[in-house]
Length: 429
Image 1 (cartoon, rainbow, N blue to C red):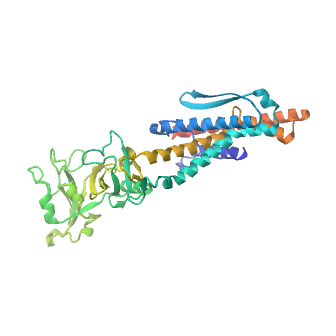
Image 2 (spheres, rainbow, N blue to C red):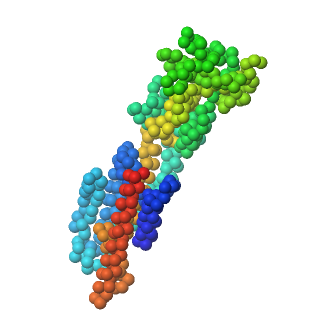
Image 3 (spheres, rainbow, N blue to C red):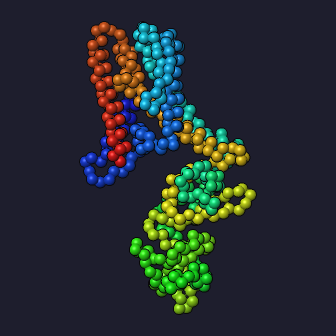
């Protein structure tokens, strides 16, 4: 009870500071143990089924804990039920009030605290299962070191297509970044987003051969290009082949443009400048130059993803022109690769997410319910604690009632402020 109250005070202070009311300096995001969950705002709607299932199971186990404890202490259980508040499910147990009031303070404490105790045990079980999940799934799924498998792709994903990413593909590299597991997957995506676009080394004679030849392009392909209204060079002309991109490079400090095949260019050595490609002075014979795709904005990247689609065939490359964040936005990945084709791809991810929600919801229910607050278990548990500590003496009834009122009012105010500031942080940010 005391630890839950301290945790709520800590959460309230964090929520208040995160609002950044008294300073114009941007607040550093803080990690909170407890936070308000609003579906569609700070909870993906795809996760709503996990949330509601975890709340329902945690609530049922909580109330079953009260019922089991009451039966053990000789208190009659009148009934048990499930209800729905808006979209959130819940459960309740009806105990015989006469038997409960006749029970001594020790028995009452056991009954009132049994629900929280069962939630705490469920939280521990979920935690153990989360850490043991890799060992439990090892006979059916291989994990780590070989890339991540795509288990889901959104219908509006720009990455899909016959030459794009498919469900079941194993992504092993994003550019030059080696993907081993989920952690390195996000690291590689972030590097692709933050690091500048890599170029491709190409020899001068190869550049002349690969440059798209047309009456419009030939006059600007190897000289200063014309520009469009947005300031970008029009080096591929009107209706260029979908396989070609406009590239820019420097020779003798002069910026040049050429329309080149993207897949061929991505097969060459990566570079950051001409020095990486050898001599680059046209007057003495260019050994190699570093050509960069002209992307138009700072968020777009031309990326090469190395994927394994068929276990017995060599890996292949998928090229993508777009924002690196699309990899996270439209794809769901997993470290677990099924050992047999008939095993569901998403099963490990579903189990892991379900256990994480069970851990979070059961833990939150345990923490909140034991706080001395009106309408929560903590209200009755605190009153029983006072009876247990001071005894049931008539001359102390007024004192215990005053203490109970003060503590419960403070606890209720603490819970209310946490909810208010929690919502403010969600919607203001």
